[in-house]
Image (tube, rainbow, N blue to C red; front, side, top):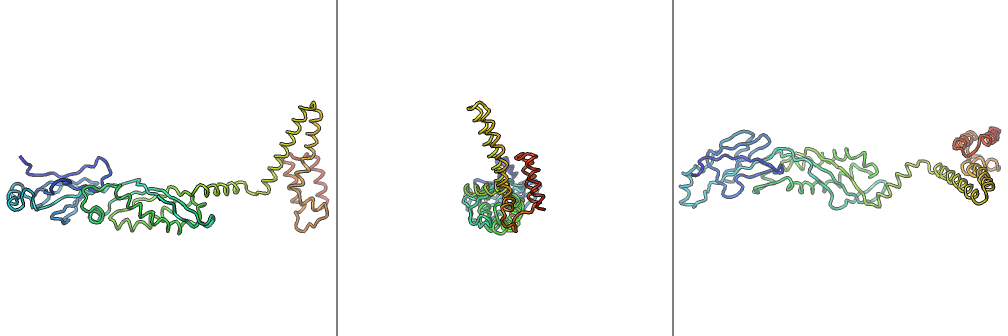
Amino acid sequence: MPKLMEVLEFLDNSGDRMVQRVPNFGSAEIKWGAQLTVRENQEAVFYRDGKALDVFKAGRHILETQNIPLISKWVTSFGYGPESPFRSEVYFVGKQLFPNLKWGTKEPILFRDSELKMIRIRSFGSFSIQIADSLLFINKIVGTRGVYKNEDIEDYIRSIIVSRLTGILGDELKTVLDMPSSFDDLSLAASVKLKSEIEALGLYLHDFYINSISVPENVQELIDERSGMSAIGNIDEFMKYKMALSLEKAAENQSGTAGEGMGGGVGAGMGLGMGFMLPQMIQNSMMSGVGQQMQGQDNSTGESAIDKLKKLKEILDLGIISKEEFEEKKKKLMSEL
């Protein structure tokens, strides 16, 4: 015996259904007096004869169709056969949050960088959406499809994001060197710009994140080199320090080699000689201003005696010269004051 009454409901076990039509297959013949059950995270749009009549919120509702059980079917069968001409269907709309949807640039974007000039960059991130206007979303996006999943709208929104991203990056980002501190500002600016376009689809953009902005490998190498130079600081002082370490290591190696081949006595003497030569070599490099003054060169653009004393003290602290040598040079510099 056929059912006189129907109960319409939809439970989504997958969590990815944005819209589900009931009945999804076969003839759309909902009987008069059908019981419609809508959950808290759902809305139901009732269509009769191709027209949306009502949007039902959570609860139990009774549908009024023209398909009266047994009677309507018997009457219409004379003119229309087994199929009823009175069409009706219900679209269940998921109002829950659809989180962590992905977006990304399939092709690099040409970007004018204030530091690196014209470069190509790629960007990736995520966003979350909700259906804000069920009727608008169905009529504008879903159409007559029986099932609509979040992956279907994800591709479309991704294309919108990528098309707007070039302008957003150009307005908000000056150089990729500032990227780490700019992600939050860029995400906020993009969210504001995309909001109106997303709302026009009947959706609400809950959040939008830019997770990464990457550059080609050769550009990344240039950025790494630039970071390394910044970490070094004063390149002149760094090179002088490296030279001092190299000379000290050379003196130690020379002493050890000579000691093995000549019984240690001559080697020790050579190492000692190198040790005495080392302070003079470093002094000539790090105190060129002192040498210029002692040779009678123009001192108008040189360093003051106080600055030279400071440098001499730094050499002493590094252990390059002895205390006696420091005092001797100090007396000469003090005499210039």
